[in-house]
Image (cartoon, rainbow, N blue to C red; front, side, top):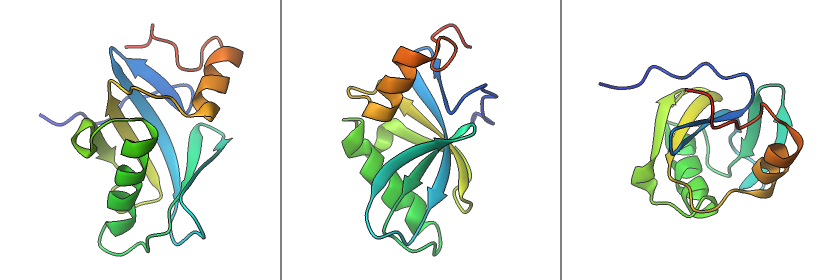
Amino acid sequence: MKNKGLAINSFCAWDDETLVLNILGQPSAKQDAIGKVKGKQLKISVTAAPVAGRATDHMVRFLAKEFAVTVKDIEVVFGRFNVNKQLRIKSPKNLPSVINKHLSQEEIGCSKELK
């Protein structure tokens, strides 16, 4: 059964060994990039156009490289055809700097206590 999404107090949270991310997507960007935190979402820009879910598919491939996981390790919980998304990344081997920074500065940010 598919997960319907995890309500989190930040743009990221741990659910056991899975990192849950709330994303604000920006399709048709000049380059693929992990941007800044906007409220309770992390801005992710991708070069792909928002046609038939292609921008989301491109985003998943881009993030798989950034988190050093396979594409199959990333689940789009909701928002495949929307700029507002939630992703679940199974056992990420690398955390991009914005997430590491958030972890070091925020006690409640990506807390592993959240279930």
